[in-house]
Image 1 (cartoon, rainbow, N blue to C red):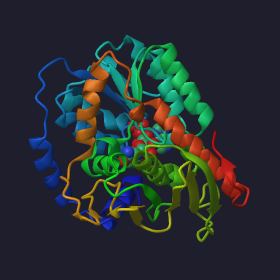
Image 2: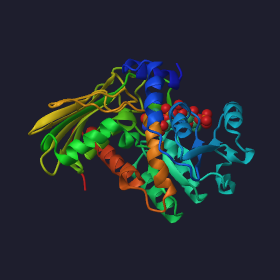
Image 3: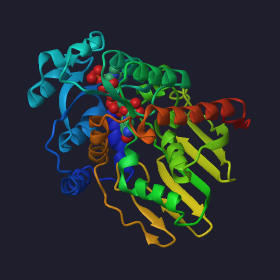
Image 4: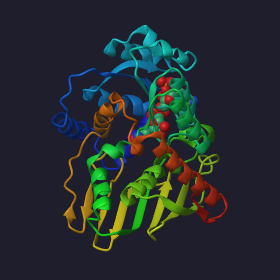
Length: 371
Ligand code: NDP
């Protein structure tokens, strides 16, 4: 089974009919299209895999701020389709070897790195040196040192570095942030979040330690961490974690199969999290002294769903990546720095927490203080 089949399978299992999604998304995103007729940002997709072609590119196409002007791929067979459809110039079609030629591609303003996690740092830094702004997919990189090098390279070359945190543009998650900020359900003192999917392809790069940097924590557990931080609008002060058992050793000799963890916040809030490549699960559950809210599915492409102690969350179901590209367009057109919450600094914060979770789990659950 290919990776994209595997992901599709997952989305299906999460309750999203493969036909229903585009219809719902198209209806909502059409009505939400911003009015903009100014200069478009030229974007190049780096890596033409599932997420780049099936999710980000439709978002680029639907957004008035962006235009696909380049591709970077190691698979020559993928070129003709995009070259023809987008009328791409030959000079804007690159591979991983001649990637630095980006510096001679004036039509390209921003590159969007959709490569395996372990390649994000290299292809971000090389793009920065070529003078291009970068959006990189989550997780930002494999470790803290790589993130710091990416932030430094982008700062030195005066380009912006964004992370593809699509939930920061998605209505249900924006509402969860508002609940936390406005204390709609009082002070949130307990958060539980779980995100996992059943891996069915033993050959996928997500099981390769070098390419993935870790297992489900790096892939989807990151959403739970990011959500806890945006609901609380605060940083956790400590973590402790345990790896789950390895039930399929043929899959999990390089990355974890599952991990559960606790995080504590300075105000005493407790977070419990779980992530796994063994089971399909997706929840964000937040409890306060005046009520609660619970989203499930909370982070995948939807339709997301939420309930609260005051009734259902009546938020629009949207195409996440269209909203993301619509949100990011003005941020990349502006001379101002990116807002912190989608910048490299945000990606770095999540990486620091994930590395502490691994450190704790490797030490059998030792409490790790976060500075
Ligand atoms: P895919 O495997 O579908 O695509 C990755 C692409 O990277 C490949 O198609 C290939 O493109 C290129 N590539 C270059 N070198 C390698 C290599 N050694 N092994 C595998 N691929 C290679 O992965 P996804 O699209 O699912 O994931 C890409 C990134 O996007 C990851 O960082 C992932 O975490 C993130 N992601 C984010 C999601 C979100 O909702 N925000 C959802 C899914 C993924 P080519 O043939 O063109 O060279």
